[in-house]
Image (cartoon, rainbow, N blue to C red):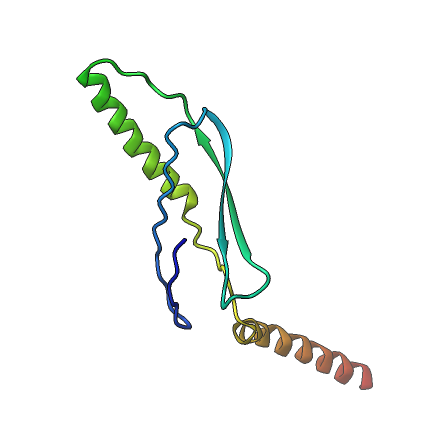
Length: 118
């Protein structure tokens, strides 16, 4: 569990470490739950991850290759789990995004009324 304070209009990258040593190869789901200000409803981020077959190594060369594969898998997992989307957007920011759409709709309605009255 990680807790941090995020100011409005700011970005913070949080690294989560989740190491599972005895997992069987296959498809799994990785879930992150975000709770803002102790709200009842949590925001959930769920990603599909794939765990490949483990390589059993008996000598140092295989061990080094395995470590390289683990590093590559870690980088791949980080790329998959890095969600650059919006987790939470305040109602003020949503309203700011809707203002241009609202103005366009009003303009179209006024133009239709003016053309119809001619």
